[in-house]
Image (cartoon, helix red, strand yellow):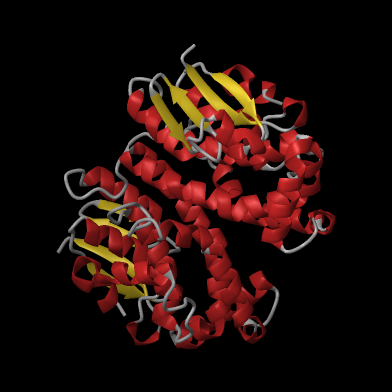
Length: 226
Length: 226
């Protein structure tokens, strides 16, 4: 196969990156197969021959694309006859807002809820880098941050209110059917599901019900990635 | 003119409703003139002959539409050859997410920052209804809520982070040019601008710069509404 994607992995081959998940779902939505090559934080530059310091990186024949957003744009333009990721120009523009919302309103409380779990399940060679970079950014020991996880969980659930309200009205963030905006937020929530046992959502939450619908997409592609 | 819109007003004819502002901007974007008829909270049902308890209400020839979102959908479908409000199906679907985000993440801290100012500037006949309904909903006296306005201002500015980050990359929420998603959030921020002197945004905030660009649209239509 000429198509491959470098995919962040933790120990035991857990593919936990929210960004890689978004790109995997975009490929599945387009019906495109790819070889997903696991790579730890420390080996990304080496694995991609210096092309990128972050994953996902998609290699599609002669084309290399880094960054999940850029990969989605590339796939939409390169495979316009496959199922659409954006449903037109307006959808493409506003999906970027959804991405900013997920990254800035959801990721901080998610990360802080599970930050020790992430650390402990990383490849041993990635743990020091992870601890040092995150403790510097968040200005506290990982253990101290995760100890307040119930507060972070509450903050996450408050931040999810707009999505929760929307999902009371329709099955997917993007409307009657899933589009890339769904995969963006799905990736954000696959991350804790794959790397921690801590439950962030209530069972009867419309967000949890939508998440379960996303897990079932493409013959349970998201579920099997667990 | 056969086209008219019932528009919430406070004392001195201040047209402060975020929802009415969204509909006014949608009409302006479509290049459609309308007579904007001021109505206080207490007289909406009477003014609209029982059609709606809330404004905006658009009357366009034989058609009556209540609710700013429904008005935008109606205008897009009834005037498809005019400038687009959504840029396609995907944009229409995700603009609804932006609406939920504005209403649920931005409106609570905005309202709490200016709730006494809103009360004091309403028509005298609307003040009792406003105080009773809002104190019941928020479980505190209006004065106590507004006294903590600096906290609410901080919460608003934290909630605006995803939009702020997006506006570092492009001039409008919707991309290179404004669409209805911009008018949604613009309406949310016109509300405090028109009815309070309290400054919610920092001057060098990309959100404030974007807001100023929106005020200039349609020959300063938003600015003149102040």
